[in-house]
Length: 210
Image (cartoon, one colour):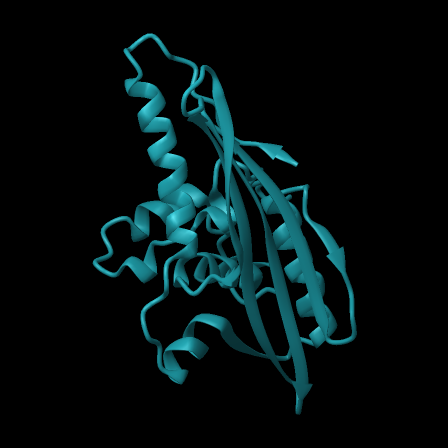
């Protein structure tokens, strides 16, 4: 489990506390928000790729390497034709704790020398905040949770595909988080920027391949 961030300054009359809480709650709300409508072609553009001359096993091995480099906290399962990876994460703020789990599923099918790859990311999260006790002193924990929901923003998938293609020899350059963030920061579509923390958040390792 990764400890991501802690606000350290509390001497500003509660301002930092409020900012920390707003930041955490905004992140959770973003995870829980309903994604915009998407056509089949848009969905496949985000989630699906096809690679010629690479076996399904080679793709799965490459996908595992990409995720291990992103964060050593990933755990893996290997059902037939799929790679399933899970990662716990925790974010500490002054008066709130947000925790969750990301689940990656990489499915492969091979036909006539072409491997079709479908990748999905599902995120579940919960937040515990401190609330004043009515009619008394002190605070009581308030817990809110978001069940597992599919991440549909394209940014984490695009970075995953680029790194996968580097690992299987289809791309010459490994894309770093800083490079990718710089490239997408001016995009006018939220779908192109959102939820990049699935690979590049402050809970990730983001190790460069050797």
